[in-house]
Length: 468
Image (tube, rainbow, N blue to C red; front, side, top):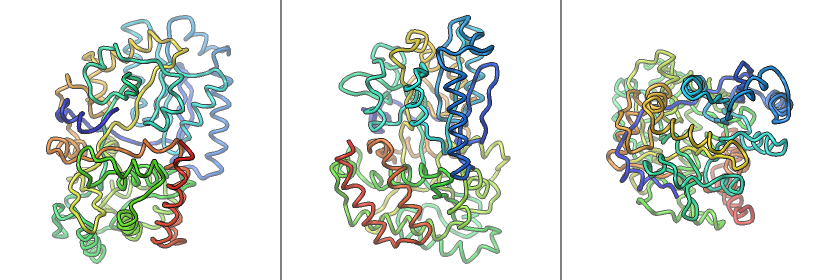
């Protein structure tokens, strides 16, 4: 199984930035691509839009359908890739086009992300006999759903070049296209102007003191809020709270290899003292956030506040680097840890493979495997991943260093061994977003106290064994 310790031993920091920018559209072109996202959408529009996109996908792209675009693709060898990093959609399509020119194999890129129900989309494709040849899963919870639809990739050349592949029972099933990191991104220029050393942000007390000082200087600093964060269920942002933020509770501050918190959670138990500290930290983030963005904002609005220098901190990962660059953001920035503890120092950030690509057993298996090897090991693939898509490479043979600031920060933490693994994807399928996400929203809305947050999370965790 992938873990950060083995990754760091096998792969020293070979990083370049990643991003996460969910444009809201559904478009079809000559490559029959579908682009699905839900970041901005209100709940009713998301549901309606998803239904329309799915209906169009099932009827227009199914294996038995006809039409000018599908018939053009079927006239030659082709594969279809389901990608959930919408931010690399255009770059991935460019690589696919170059790959087709080189090999004659047409590669259909279908991108979905933001607030879209990616697992629901895949399940719909499976039900309609329309599965892509390469699809995405996000850890043990999703692997449990899809493992019977995957082929083992043990003998692939790229599998010998990484410690970040997803393995189960001695077999490799997941292709790691990237490694990512997240913490509290900060505007270093604003912290310097306020006289705050980011090195002090390694405990709850350190954050509380910094937030109070920054809040008292809002006019002088020209900011609207200290933090930019979103927690809205209708806006599709529970992946920020229920998934990524809760991942901090599961691993931050623990020694490498210590998995007792996530193992307890899988058995239905919590560390109540740790969870109480964590709840207070979450409330601190919420209290110092722009309340409009927190409660109803989407991904783009969250990012915009940080881009414009209207918030000092951003709760995201290095995947935002290219979006910040595209916006012309020029201030210095880096990551601080999610240091929630009141009793210990937390001086690392969360680093791991965000998801993996799998090969569908009943798809065009051989061509899918060739595509993955080209993407991982060829010069064109390296250039596309590292330079064009700004992804942090999980492959040992890659020596490129990150150029973008947040990915450079991730690389620095990795090189110093200051990382904690992504454990959130070990939870049952849908649990973090669908069960925990709404609890976060209640806390953000001040409809529950931190004590009630702890009680509700504890009760939800108690149900986990029955969901596995």
